[in-house]
Structures are given as structure tokens and as C-alpha cells.
Length: 79
Image 1: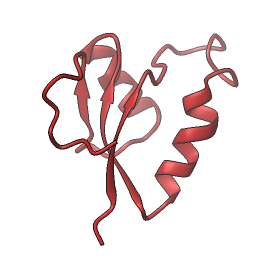
Image 2: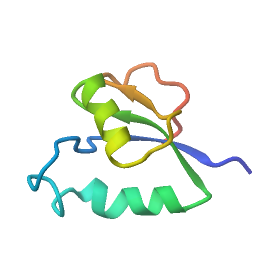
Image 3: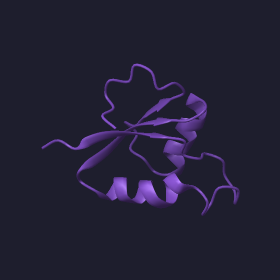
Image 4: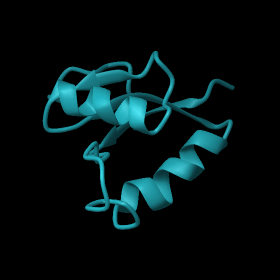
């Protein structure tokens, strides 16, 4: 069975202590999703494409992860 393709919304890209230890997605969702063979993070939606690209690099997501500023019409995402 193929992994479920996941799109995350709102993964903080700012550096520094402002978000460290306070982001629900970073502390709860990201570790589980990246370690589970049942899920594949295929997209990240932030307030801008640039912010999403920064977060993809910051958290070491695969280079194939798509960066979006708008969720509409993203057929490659299951969840």
C-alpha cells in the first residue's frame, strides 16, 4: 500500500527562539509523520511560497516537498 500523501499547513520558518518548543506541528505532527512509513509529506503550505521553502530546508524535509502559498487545487495531497 502506498503511503498517504500529507500536506502540512503552518510549519514555522522563522529562526530563533520565537517558535522553538511552541509549535504544535513541529513538536507533535512532524516527528510522527517523518518517521512513519504510512505517511509521506509531499507539500507544505505557509503564508508564502518563500516561507514554505525556508521551512522545508529548516526541518530537513525531502527536496521533492512542494512549497505552496495557496492550498486550492492541490490534487497530489490526500490529507
